Image (cartoon, rainbow, N blue to C red; front, side, top):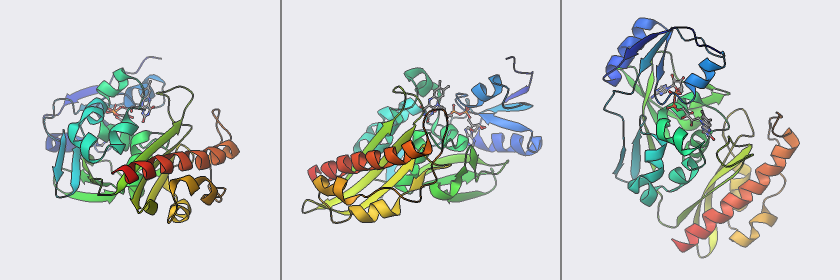
Length: 286
Ligand code: FAD
């Protein structure tokens, strides 16, 4: 399919991009890596009147570690996230999850902010950000606001982002002492979108989990925290997790061409146990 001609503008700062968005009054989209926007346009699922390229913007890139928190610029590419020494040292769950995204070619172009704004419930980054309780800094150029990941991702390809807003950065806690992480995914082939995925964090003391965080992706209209599984894990040794975590109830799972809702509910439990077991063993070793 041919994409109909659209106006193309290059922004040299986030502020300039916001100004162009305001002028376009809802008729323009920003483009970062183009790895979701252009496929949608090519498939005829999105009409583009005007595109504002964030490529030349020098800010909002890279990772900073400060006072127990990590701030990642929205324009940081997946490949940079995957290889970033600070993230590998202080929050390795994020690079591990990113390594599941598409192929090296996709990861070389795609950006953190693009993936979060696209808000695909089967994407890895919204899932790990939900598990981590990440905060997204959104800007209009004049005004900023902070939105938590679980409030930002509303439904399929739908987020809390307003037409005149951009994601500027994402803030997550660094992995604390005694904490471990785990990530488990089922997809048709490595690099395909998740049929189901789980991201877990566990704090271990005296060989037992004392605190756990678990989110699931690919199963529901948005990534979700699983409070009941977190509670069931508390006090468990990793070898007890399979017995402790009962059947997943109340999960409104999706049926599509990849899997039925029933199969996804089954996968949710299997992946939750795997991710939490890995998190517990890493927490134990920490
Ligand atoms: P773009 O395509 O440029 O933009 C996507 C959307 O975000 C657009 O609406 C755009 O306007 C908006 N946007 C971009 N940046 C910002 C910002 N800073 N603030 C506000 N809005 C913004 N993803 C996965 O998670 N897992 C996969 O397994 C996976 N497999 C893929 C396989 C293929 C073949 C392809 C083509 C893509 C795949 N992707 C996958 C998607 C990939 O991760 C994209 O890079 C990502 O979803 C979008 O990032 P981008 O920078 O390319 O955004």
